[in-house]
Length: 222
Image (cartoon, rainbow, N blue to C red; front, side, top):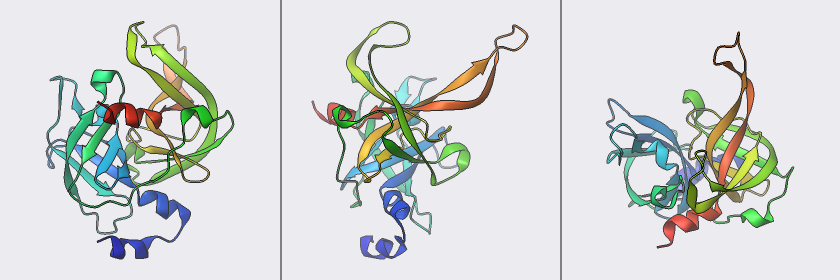
């Protein structure tokens, strides 16, 4: 119940965790993938589509579980896919639950963001549930084509930042200093260093990329 959960909120970070979820897709005994999500309304959670998508069979997984990061009992609840953004070339999906959620009420538009703005990422990278890191916006970009040169149905508004992320951060919220939702963390660009002329190897350091929170409305709007 919401009134019981409030007693566990002890800091501003806890307040952000109250909105944030661990997301797992596939059977409970053999999960296909995992990531993060953020409650955007009383019954809706936003995450990345690739967290719940079976790319081998080209379909969305029917079994999706979520767990609130502030739930000390680690209770999991099953949710359903409500809206998908892949058909609009946006890697944001909306999950629906019957439970009443605490959710982030304010979202900050892409047009209001600036380079060097403070941001905070929250997620579950490499199995570290509830990991958080802060940083700054490094760049703001709008992609009208994908990496193969195909025109995107919905130009992607990208927030490049240096708050630490990793595998499992996908779908997690990116907040500003006031706790407003500014983006959905989606992928990391990692530096590549040549190694004896063979393909190269990944080295430490990289940049987080978040899709603007504006795209939540693109997905919800038919």
